[in-house]
Image 1 (cartoon, rainbow, N blue to C red):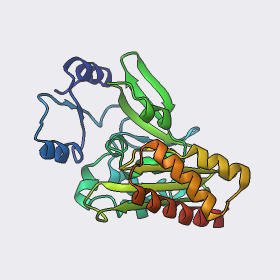
Image 2 (image 1 turned 135 degrees about the vertical axis):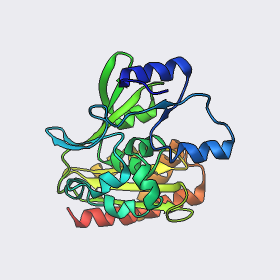
Image 3 (image 1 turned 90 degrees about the horizontal axis):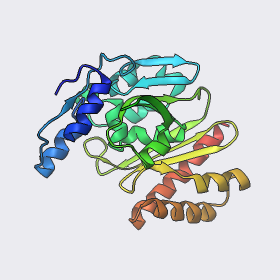
Length: 258
């Protein structure tokens, strides 16, 4: 189905219980693996206003959900706002996938960009049955509203913030991430986020400890972060250990830039 507008796309998706389709780089392998192809697809149009492109505004940097990963990586505003992104992109699939895959698709699939966007306290614009509304990315992924269509994601003006991201995968490019960890310092406090096999979210308890006590000993960090990861759904003890080690490394890197 090819809707004429975003509102119609939302209507089609809800009426026919059909998934949205843009680049298809995540949906296609999932459907092939599960051998379960949908009867209908709602095709999204990158020509709809606000759905594609990168724009600097009073809120920060807004990226349309149908902007391709390659377009974002090559945009001149990416370096000042998202300095670790180009390095991270080298670990996101291959060039052909990055030419097709979209920012919105990567976020919705729990891809590598999600941890970075969460650590930067990003907000999202969503098209629903009653129009467009904005909310924090962290709240939306925790309690998504069925059928809502992601139009864009906005990161605040984070120019000059020390930001670091690290990915752990089965293989560097051609498999889903096992874990991606992001760390940012906004001048007042450290922000931490993860995504991967155990789910996605901000590590708010660990952030509070760092805010109240400063960078503690590695033992304290391991205990608090490990417990919070387990509460988020990270059941694999070895994977939690790997994430804790990445956190320690990223905290040292970010604190050097403060």
